[in-house]
Image (tube, rainbow, N blue to C red; front, top):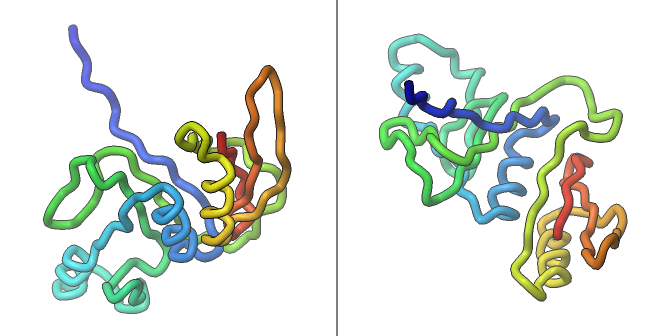
Length: 152
């Protein structure tokens, strides 16, 4: 019997999900989802309250969560919810305290490591440390909220 793979997304806790979505969309060349049509419909029928929403990048957005998705992946045109490579940022009250137990590895084009480090720093990332092992070099960086990721 053939089975269908499970759909999934990575969910990242954040103090400011919209700032994180803007950073990661730019870092990965992803697209911030525009859920304004869905939100407007839910507001119109009284399914959600206005205090559950904010304006972000000129669109109505959820106050406590927002996602980014790969621009080439399938999505629902009615809600703009991605159906592929997707990262959801959700607001949490507590700050990040310890090292991530999961992190993203980004892979730059050959010979472009330093230019990618500079581009990500311009977006708000910080170099934490540089590492080399077995003839491979990579840079451990943090996003604007201190979440670690590696750039190879």
